[in-house]
Length: 336
Image (cartoon, rainbow, N blue to C red; front, top):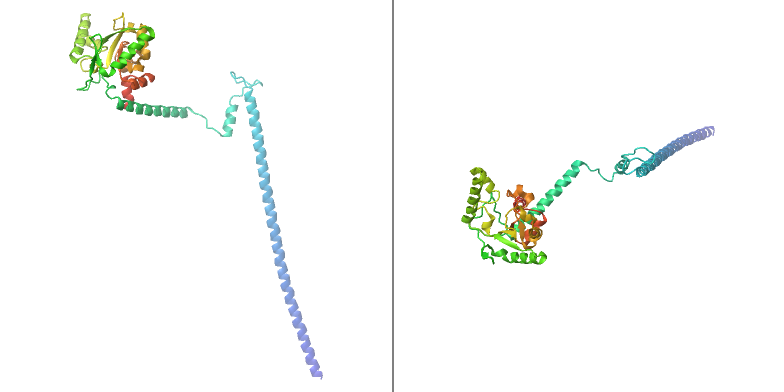
């Protein structure tokens, strides 16, 4: 009995120890989990604190930037108001101090436009000039295509095309012939001139043959030599008004010398005649141009001839008159 009692007591003691060990293990496990939970809670609080500080920093920076922007605008508005008070001539404000450049500073601070420089302006001008030249070239090419026979160029550097010939029409005076294509417009122009101001004219010279043209050159050369000029000087002076055979517009039949009735001189006195002045202003309406204007002597290389008119057709004449172009300049634009 004693032995059994001892054995049960020993067994009971062992069970008690096992329970204590088990409770110790459970206690240790609970403490570990509690430590983990507390650590995670601390970490969450730390993250929340960092986020709050970051948000506060961004908000403060934004408010500071807005305040600076408002202050800048107030300063600019104040400066602009002062600039408005300046005298338009002296640039002095009511405060008595010079405030030059304030308006420009405001415009530049706004950043809306780039200031114009001489280089930018020059570039724009060149672009506009190039665009205008291209447009003029296209117009001239089209006019030439439509009126090639009427826009033929003949001058001291360009001989009449071999075989060129226009059908001719004899005028009422029975002395002068002109190209038939211009006859009706010529007749209308002379009639309108008479109705407008009672202007009457003498039709001095139209179509010329090559031999007759050369005879005029020889006549003028002899006249200059008789006046004491050398042959070289005589020829140079002659070519300022009369071209050699093959280089005269009169051989086309499209040129006509017109003088005021009562004045048969082929000189600048014709420009003083009211009837000739009327032709200068209105001949383009009928397809004619003043072929050798005074201000274009360097271009045509011919002295001013207020009596010499050239038929080019109404469309081309209107364009040449509007743009103040000679036939030489017309060809220059077309061949660019």
